[in-house]
Amino acid sequence: MSELNPCMTCGACCAWFRVSFYWAEGDDAGGIVPSHLTEQVTPFLRCMSGTLHKPCRCVALEGTPGESVRCTIYENRPTPCREFAMSGENGVVNDACNRARAAWGLPPLGETPPLSGLPLNAATAESSRVQLPAD
Image 1 (cartoon, rainbow, N blue to C red):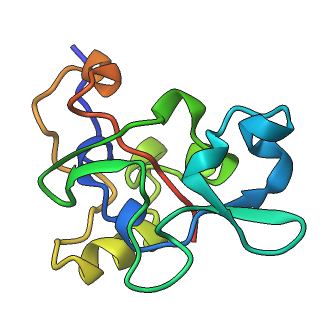
Image 2 (cartoon, rainbow, N blue to C red):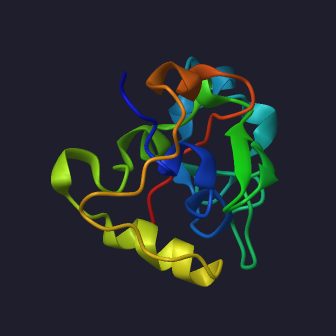
């Protein structure tokens, strides 16, 4: 059975980086991101509410970073979240992930991250999904 990457329940990145993206990703412009959870950054960029200024925390993040979190819009998350690589995936460390984890007092994830013991299909469970934003 495959194991769940620890990034899927961490959420440090969701509570550390600004999540900005092209305005048309909002559902009011034909995209899938719930526009009522975003705010305008420039005429061409939006961000997830709660991530524009430090301290930040994405409004779609539920739970306690580093313990147990989920993204309430996981299926409709913006591009930066979809493209943010899970640390340890394919043997590659994500330095941005480790910076966010350090900010939350969490240890870095190495090339072979510790496994949480949850099956991979738990990533879609309501209690274990997390948004993965870029910095």
